[in-house]
Image (cartoon, rainbow, N blue to C red; front, side, top):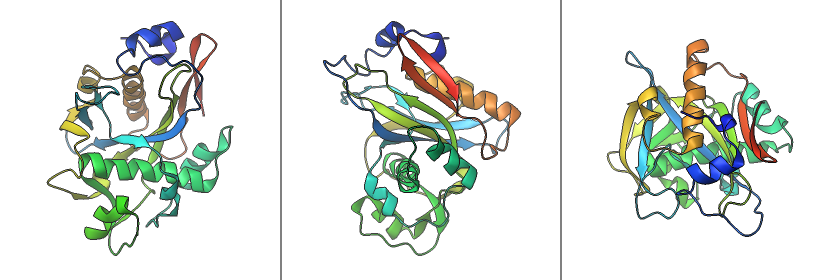
Length: 248
């Protein structure tokens, strides 16, 4: 089983061929966020995974975490609690530096996408108001989103030359932080949504970066079972012909 830092750029072009075809010009990666929900109520840690519909052009049929592109407008959404200061400093502090508003938008997009794709609302029960059509599920269910329990656990930038490039921040949160679980998902982005043991999830049809981040998460939980804020965050990116791994 290969990890991201063990691959060359040529290797990535092969193993991720289904995810996207090669482009003809460089593209600036777009901000994106992914949320890994972790259930620790049993004897082993479970993570929430869903299969992308096969009709999608991007990674059809692959298992993924809820997530997607960041909407800058999410920075204007009210929250019950902001990011933990140590987590925010990790998000904004590594060049190029982010503004606090951009960091908030990235983190909130992970929560929004989890609602849209998995029907799970993370936050505190209570009054919440927003004019954004993307947050009406929180309004209707009286859940005010909260960022306090999110943990920044990894970052990865899609290699140059891809048709779609993302600068993705991976967050983790305990399942206990879910205020409401809807019976039906607002969208059909994901199917076969299920809670899967981490090591079993690594054997599914998943992107290379997803397997790498799951491995990182499993090792972190062994030494940091509470996911304490402010811990080192692995960052994966391509430099020259190799994938680099540095700690933020």
